[in-house]
Length: 380
Image 1 (cartoon, one colour):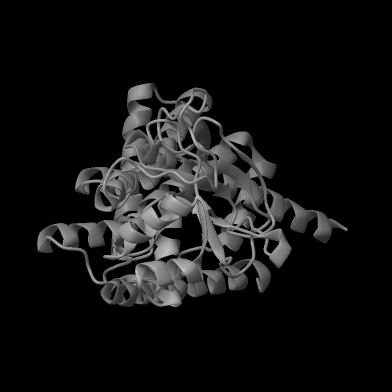
Image 2 (cartoon, rainbow, N blue to C red):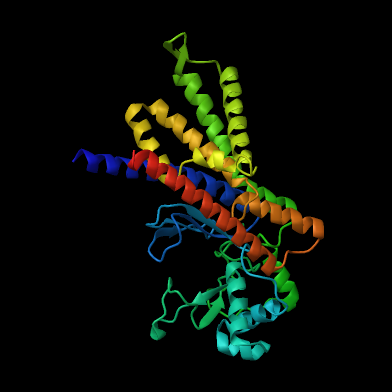
């Protein structure tokens, strides 16, 4: 019975701590994207799943929710997927004219293969410019693994703003609903530019990098704040001459302590990229299993210990995400810098290769950290 209760405690505190920190991380991306005028369609705790509990914001159009796979989280910012294509403008205007159209018919109208047309639809859907239409008569339903046969327009106000755009207003005449034809008073290329400007892809270098930095930055700032408040208000154990004291520094000293700790974590993260230190750092690393065990132990000890552990994990999460390894935020920033230097987007093939290398290294880190935790906490 004690083993069962201990296991439940580990799972509970692990999920609570990691969910909190993922929420903070993704919240940073969300707030930055919205501040720079990017469309954000989803904000979820948990990995993508067809099963979810969610609600849609009337202000932002964003679907906020949670999935049962509480091992992470995501913010779906428009324009971070898909590719540029010379037929995007024609495809978008085709849907605007018809309101709702089958992909096979759209492909014939704009003169391309059906698979190509589906790629165009995927990109425009990612932009929030159109939406898939799931026909119940064909047995189609949201969450299915394949795209439906048809796509349709999204609701737009008088100024062509959709629900994801800032200051949209559907309370006055001139708006159109989902699936209604709406031909903009502009050329196809101008309308595509209008839509692209509201995505991550359509923003300049600075807003894009700031949005990528926002997630790790919020984790680091939250950690600093938590450490400063905890040690200055509640204090922490401080050993001297074999005796244990409660150390409660003033705010200035607490700030120095917090920033010194941040520099230590930053150096730890950077040493991971130095071949001569990589395995040394990995041997002392923990996975989600170790974090869950430590969170449970800290919670059973004191609120101060739990608070400092949360700060430690948040700090590590922030700096680890800044490492120049795709698909981490730092890796995406490196790609942005490369594209700025060469003055053109990296090819899809090049980005795919870099991502595969990054994912492989990331999985290697996870496997080693998991092995550490199994030896440390399970095998004893």
